[in-house]
Image (tube, rainbow, N blue to C red):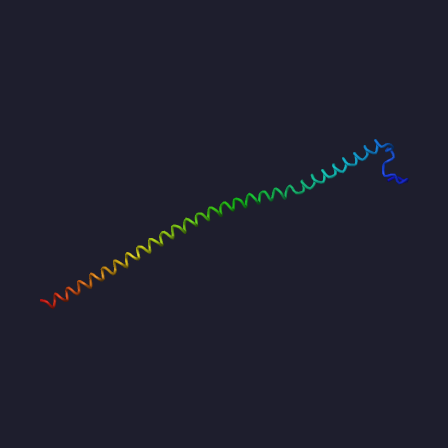
Length: 118
């Protein structure tokens, strides 16, 4: 603003000059905004690079954890199958025990009867 309260510089005298002046002011504001965006972009570049590295590292860790999870699931499945086999073997062993015991008792009874019959 000049000494007379005119908001335009002294070279602005016509409407065409006013239009050019305002256009220059707009371009100047846009250039300042672009420079500010570029400055922020440059300022944030290391942060973005660090975040991208962190994201890549996290994705790798997630992949490894998923593989470990699958391996543990397979181990649990094998343990369950082994447990079922052990239960079947235990039932078979108990059945064999009772059959053997029954045969032994029958053999003792036959021996005692044979002893008294003679």
